[in-house]
Amino acid sequence: MSAAFHEPTTIAEAVAILATEPDVCCLAGGQSLVAALNTRSFAAPTLVSLQRIEELRGLRRGADGSVTVGAMTTHRDVARADCFQAGQEIVPQAAAHIAHPAVRTMGTIGGSICHADPAADYPGVLAACGATVTLVNARGQRELAASDFFVDFLTTAVEPDEMVTAITFPPMPEGTRGIYEKFCRSEGDFATVSVALILGMHDGRCAFARVALGGCGPTPVRAPEAETRLIGSRLDDDDISSASNLLCSRAAPQSDVRGSAEYRLMLVPRLLVRALDRARRRP
Amino acid sequence: MSADIPIKLSVNGEDRNIFVTPTRTLLETLREDLDLTGTKCGCNQGVCGSCTVFCDGLPIRACLALAVTMRGREIVTIEGAHPGDMLSVVQQAFVDAGAVQCGFCIPGMIVSATALLQETQTPSDHDIREALSGNLCRCTGYAKIVAAVSLAARRLNGTVGGAT
Ligand SMILES: Cc1cc2nc3c(=O)[nH]c(=O)nc-3n(C[C@H](O)[C@H](O)[C@H](O)COP(=O)(O)OP(=O)(O)OC[C@H]3O[C@@H](n4cnc5c(N)ncnc54)[C@H](O)[C@@H]3O)c2cc1C
Image 1: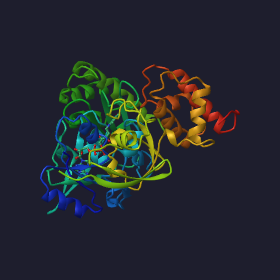
Image 2: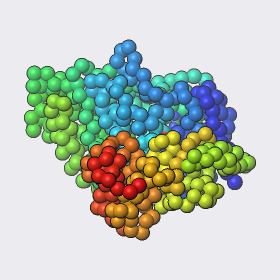
Image 3: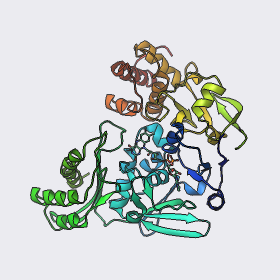
Image 4: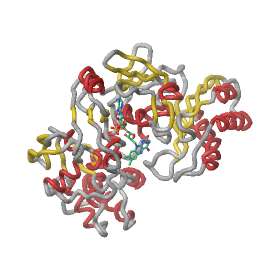
């Protein structure tokens, strides 16, 4: 026995199906969902494929400098996009580091954040950018900050009758640079630890800093006090090491096949140094 | 319970009409419904790369694509290599470089390598290794595989001659 399949072509049709069908689930690129179905360890839900909804694809730059990415935009398309500016370039950088070319052809930003694997690349980037996620159901629309969207390990604030339609990355201050530093066992693997950094310098001092960690807890880790510690400093060894300590005290990594919790905490200061070095090196 | 869904897709240039259940993967369809067994099932989790095929010109994992979503798409598998085309040049380079050991991973390797060469004419060994990082060879014959892709690149851009 297998479940039913729907292939709507508009958001309105899709949310109408989500509102009425029991045990229903969106299918985006299938790069996590189909892998799970292939294990045959649970009964297949009714699938609503979002692949034919054209209004969910593509990137748009707003007049205010924000960039809105449709939920069904593939990792490949984000990695190749040229509409991201100061600081926001961390988004295509991270997309280019997700998995392998064949997975990037199909996998989408909406699917990635809804799956909410703490070792995935987008969650930390959304957190560092202060991105907002747009959710829609049959009754209306709401916007959530990344910090409210990611709730727990593989758990988001998306309700069963809701779908994500877009992610909006706000403009960052002029002159800032975004750096995504991913540490993984081999090219294309999920991160052991990742650091998403947006940095602005002025006269040799740090004028703007946003940092988020991936792979260091059930949801992306941010530490406003670490950012405060960096801002105004010259980013000397002492500054970086106390900011790292502040970040680590917020982190709650698990031990798994990619590394022990202790090892992950050891990676944090090293990756932060690398990210800060890359951000300060002129392009 | 739902009846099988009819879909029409193009496989190696030929239109195929088939019936599929919602959870049938493209990989199962290729191997079991269409008898195209060149595409291999290794992990069925998207990790090993043995099932990599082209969909509308781009590489995808056939094990992670539901057949029912492939309506109207153009699929090209290793069986779709024709004398003279890029897929076949890459295939021949694998033969000439002695890059094939047990052969199980090779169809996926050839598709991933061809996808790389469509975008990069003169890849470095590093580019090749990165592009093939999602294709596992359990014989661990990577050195000759990288040499084969490099040979294919040189044949395609005319810096060396060679059979196709
Ligand atoms: C071999 C391999 C390596 C990988 N490596 C990495 C990596 O290094 N880094 C990384 O970040 N990721 C990695 N991934 C995961 C990949 O990025 C997936 O693309 C992603 O996790 C899921 O995206 P998808 O579009 O395929 O979603 P799907 O698998 O289709 O869906 C995932 C989940 O999200 C739900 N969903 C999807 N879209 C929506 C929506 N718009 N609204 C509501 N719910 C929705 C689905 O119902 C499902 O529960 C890897 C995957 C594979 C197979």
